Length: 151
Image 1 (cartoon, one colour):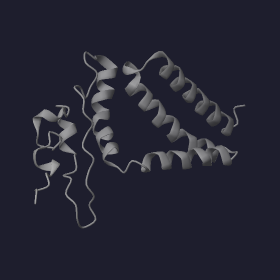
Image 2 (cartoon, one colour):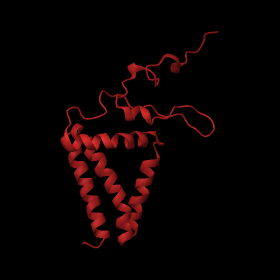
Image 3 (cartoon, helix red, strand yellow):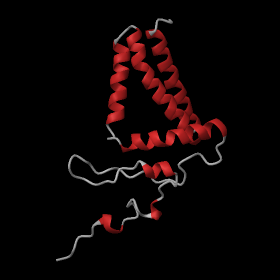
Image 4 (cartoon, one colour):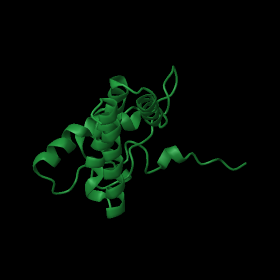
């Protein structure tokens, strides 16, 4: 009987493999889950492949924001894939449903999250993607302003 090959034995995607392409940024390694299962723990997703964790050649404000955002991004990446979209949709639905300042408060975290991710991904985006992100941020600003009674 032929033995089955376990891909985790020699896979370049194992956490200890230098071939994997995991960013060299220390925050990317420090907060990573171990991937052990049992007693309520689930297997963690490995970080995505890529050559750079930060924008190459970034200086000033962008570099500062990217460095301060590294740990939260790694933390968010370790959460279940469904959690962030579900929370954002719930907040957005509350923002649409509640016609007063409480609806505006519910939209603000969505606006902040979308704005933060748009800023972080801006250098790698094409023109169409940039236009969509600006349109989404503008729409969220209008919704929040309406809920706060500015229109």
